Image (cartoon, rainbow, N blue to C red):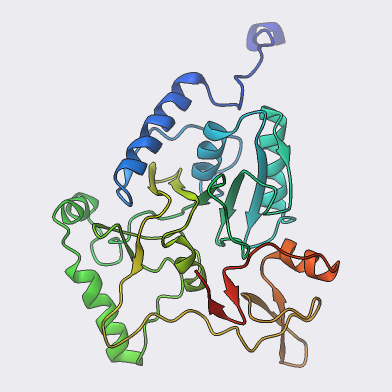
Length: 299
């Protein structure tokens, strides 16, 4: 046996890494997901050069949408410079030739894990969220066949019961991320692992949001100007994290979502979670229009 028998002649990759058949299927499923907001669409998740669970769903959606004129931004936990975000951004640029940016305002496609940028997105921008678990009913119904029938029947009583039990036990809803939300008055979705702070940014937003789970082979979407309503009781209002009184130790920013930095003396300091927003404020640049001002949401 020789190496020649084990190797194949060099052949160029398809544009954007995915082959035409895979992109065609993804585009069909994205269009279906847009037509039925919040409804999960199955798709044949392809292999990409990162491990499942590290953003393969979002990466496949981005590779399907990207073109040479795109400007791509990748965020991981709010940061552009994490290993995962930098690796995905470099890979997308290498296989598509698209430009990359760290600036939310300049991007046309924003792929994100765990956060929605603090600056408002426009109608010409697409937000792709990486979703680890797309099924909001999984905590109350582990049988996925039964869960899909519950979606078909709009049977979400157990989700209401779960929220009620949390309020009875501890006096408040404990769902800190992936808060179940009703989309367009019909389907309940889990809006990725984004914090409660970011859920209002999806409601009646100008931009298209695509949520894709590669490991679970499911994607769903929130089209522009679509209602996204967190499940709440009439007498227990929806509340986001109270970060209004926190100050960023580096930029001095207030009233935006902060990361807690534990200190050796047992105290904590805080930094702006949206790293590029923090850089803008440090450089004295004027950020784009913001979702929150002094901790208060401004649609």
